[in-house]
Image 1 (cartoon, rainbow, N blue to C red):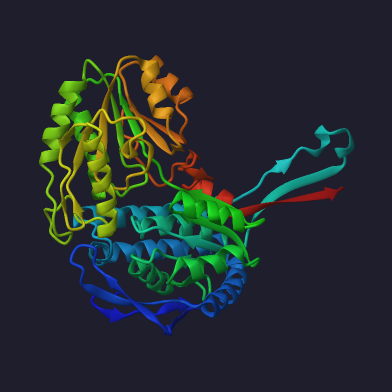
Image 2: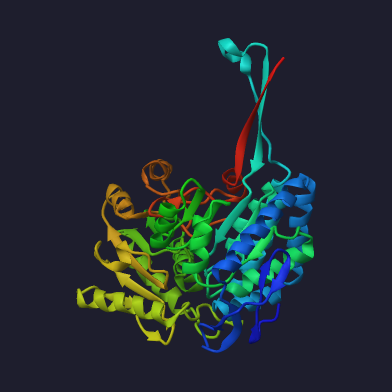
Length: 477
């Protein structure tokens, strides 16, 4: 698990294989080469699928306890290597160490949830005599693994979002071919090493690095792959759904999450949570706060508190203990959002704070009352930028949140119970977080969205359901 500039290998069929060609992996912060990563060819992916087929047979033979024990051992090894894994994140995706450690702790918890869920996969008996023709019959259901699952993961939480795919897949008895984001292969390869040490059968996990146009195309179209689970952009997700045929497909495609601040007992605490939700990991979070709608009587007070707390954030080297924000994943991403800021300025919108760019670092930026057609309002930023808008009536606030092509999660701060329940009923999102930010997530809750935010749900129990088939058995007595 070295993170210095060295040549990495693919992990296929329980073996570490050399690649024919490589690309330089560079630190988003320093620009230095930190590793050379294999570019898998089509033939390599086909070999991984063949190995995964055999791995799926071996996984199906394991008892629930054996699968649970492997996941528990993996969690324990991660616990021993928190600092090592956190440093990988700081290097490959510029995640500040404080946040990186938090991700590894969540990864451990995710695998422990999966270990527990492996023991709870069951069916039910069916009362056949409830039907006229069912008398004299006994029936039950059971859940069976799908086989080979393709997991395509993003750069922003490369350990934990991989765990949300690997954990339930292994708990259910499937094998996995993992295609990590090109910027974050080191975390996937580290996870492969940990599962190898934990005793996972050969072929149950295969890590194939390289171009999505090569690796992803084979995985999505090959009939031996029974499911594709993808986290990433809407455009890529739509392409996967169009080409996947009859495969199961789970898509988590992001958002431009909103929070309503209707009333609050402690506006200071609300402002602090909104700063965390807006700027954690430089806003490169699917449920990052991007739109804040504040009741007009609270607007000026909230904006002042929010701005003052934002000013306290420190940005710089991700390997520094003091850093809160570091570089975006690439300088092009920083330039893209810098263009949004210039567009807002040109439209006469006030930039309350920030707006500067230093290389790939975009300073935390607060925009006042952005128009509904401006990029910050209607597109996903994936950057440290947020609009703070005022509203007059409760109905207006609900409509403003729903005026989006996305619907992952939304937050609502209110001291009114009727309004809280009304928000749950009327907001067009997959999850409503009452009296907290939409960025809240624990790893066993159902997680997923509506509209362009995707299809299906993650959260270990719910992923297990997606990653199994229901089989019915009927006996004539």
